[in-house]
Length: 142
View 1 (tube, rainbow, N blue to C red):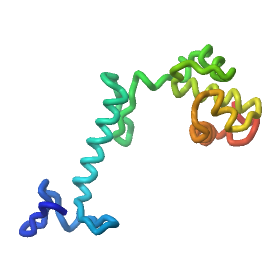
View 2 (view 1 turned 90 degrees about the horizontal axis):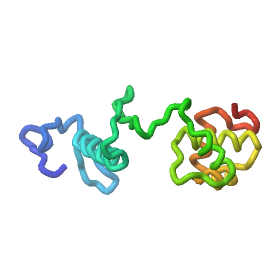
View 3 (view 1 turned 30 degrees about the vertical axis):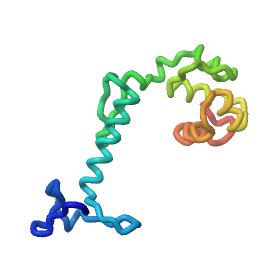
View 4 (view 1 turned 120 degrees about the vertical axis):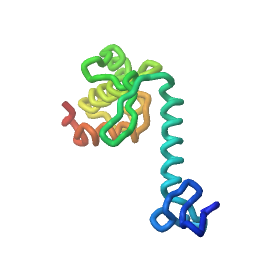
C-alpha cells in the first residue's frame, strides 16, 4: 500500500489499515476502500460517456439507470421488431425491441446462432434474454 502511514495505521485517504489492507496475486498491497472508490468513479465515468446528458434514476442498489435509453415495454416500436425478426434490424434497437424480436424468433423454434444473426446481437445476449424471460425451452416464449 503506497503511502501507508505506519504510525496511524491508515492509508493516505485515512482508511483503517487493519480492515482495508488487501494483497494482490503479485504481492502488491492496496487499500480496499480506495480501490472501491476508484472503481465507482470509473463506472460513473463510463456511464456518462455512454449516456451524455441523459436523465437517470438510481436503482435500489445505487446504480444509475438511463431514462432515455430504458424503453418501457408498452412503447416498443413494432416496425423495428418486425424488421429485426426479418433479418434487417435498424441501426439502433432498444433493449425492449431486441427482446421482443428475439422472443418472436424463438417462437418459430430457430436456433440461437440464427436468432443472434437476424437480430444483430451476440449469442450471449440471446441467451441472457432467454434466462431473464424464462423462455429456455422451444415454444415456451409468450
